[in-house]
Amino acid sequence: MTKLKFDLAIVGLGPRGHYALERFVQELSRADTVKAARILLFEETEQMGNGPVWDLSQPDSNWSNVNDRILELPERSEINFGTALIEGFPSYHDWAANNPTARSVDNSDHYPPRNVVGAYLHKRFDTLLGPLVEHGIAKLIHGSANAVALTETGACVTTHSGAQYLADQVLLTVGHQPTHLDPQIEAWQAAIGKRDALCLFDEPYPVRPIVNAAKTDTDNSIAIRGYGLATIDVVRAIALAHGSFTLRDEQLCELTFTPTETSVPTIIPFSLDGLPMGPKPVTEQLDRQFAPSEKVLEALGRELSDPKLQTRATGKAFLLDAITSVIVKVFLGLANKRDDAPLDGDTLHDLIQAWIEDQARGHKYFLDTDQPPIEFLKNLVQMANGNAAVSLDYCIGQVWRHCHPTIYRSLSHGALNEDVLAEIILTDESMKRYAFGPPMESLQQLIALYEAGMLELDYLADPDITVTDQGWVLTSGDNRTVAQIMVNAVLDAPKITDVRSPLIEGLLQDGLVAPVHDELGVATTADGYVISQNENVLPIAVLGRLAKGTIIGVDAILECFGERPRIWASSAAKRAVVGSVESR
Image (cartoon, rainbow, N blue to C red; front, top):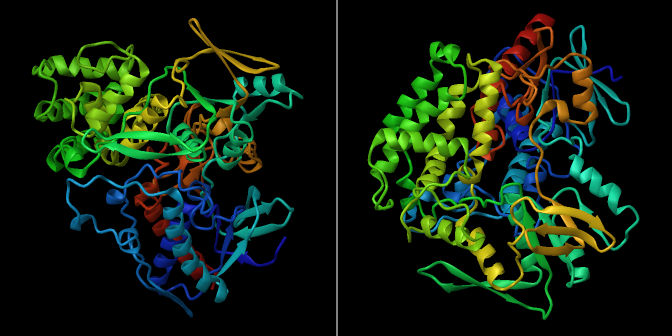
């Protein structure tokens, strides 16, 4: 164990740990009582400040799901911290020379490759870390932290190699953690055994090994478990390794895929319901029609954050009743909605809530989930580009997306009981198909690949699957096909009890963290500090997806640079100030 004791240890230096460190140093620089600080930093990857999601080495085919226009990562002001001068760093918009106010609202939104955003985050962090290390304020441990234990005066962090470090307080910003394999994936692993001709990828990232496997034998078929954003990334990467997309009709937003080879692999996605994600509107002007007014959002926030109403809530209806009224107002105000759409608020209210309960529900005001999958994709694209009247389900998802910041702010650290909160979070997760949809161009590409014969859509909805010597045999009705490569593109949910990393398992076993609910993450205070199983507040804080349940909305890049790290940093700096005063 090292004799030096640190004021703070941060485990995980992705975007959230990056911004938390930045804010902590800013807060301390304003405190007259702190003359020096010692900060310990742990990161096991090479992606310092940006994390694996924004990996610098990933291909350009991995797109951000947040467009440049709303990617508001604030600038960093210059920080004078003792002998260290940390220069200011521009906002993302200034760094990327992308001024949203200078562009037409009719321009198509641009979704940058994730490696571009990663480059911004990495450079910003490098200019923060450098002066801190140079002046002896920060010490970087390039490795994993495997355990955190309490001591009489703080906490002890143990690394993979067994080295131990003492700190007054610890912040965990570890992002995605390994979990138990899904039983279906485990069964497939066992079934393929030594069948060398078959290849199973239990994760969609990185995509390069998948692309390489598909290039080895272009007669192979690739099945992809999932039909969401990760699947789109994998499909796009494979496609671009075998051809290119060109614009066929600008007005109709149609693409053509042209193979560069005589033989290309077949890609076969599938999911439980077989329903695609709905794309975001293609321009700011089209997107504005789904945005509730500030007045409406303020009223929604007041209702959702009311502690008396939260205490009385018995289920997700607490949220649904409030947000449905908002959706009704927006839908009635749309200029291009279906001609036969009901104009009665009560009727709309019932239809909206019924669809949220069952998104496969059939009704003439919703997109027909029984139509051919290619027609479903085309309908979504036409609505996203303003070439078709808006269906009620598409409107629900887009309004929900605009309400997200209000929902997250109003319900995090509130008075809702754990079962109600779990219901609400699971409902919010179910809305991601529309509310977290991809750029419209992603669906255009899927359509082009289908038309080129490279994308197979006959097995989308929960096919029967068996493993033979020939590969994964997928059967749907009278259709049957075989895939030699299988990719799991379903990402783990933030369920703390399923996590299988030594760090989190140890905290659970030692009773230092307690799940908010069986399906959710750990309990924390409003400023991010862990509430243990015996309800003590610990000198250990958690920000991010492992705290999902106490807070809502944890995965987005905008949340990493949002209010939660700022609130934590203010409290953490005060603790550091108190500690320094008491120690003198």
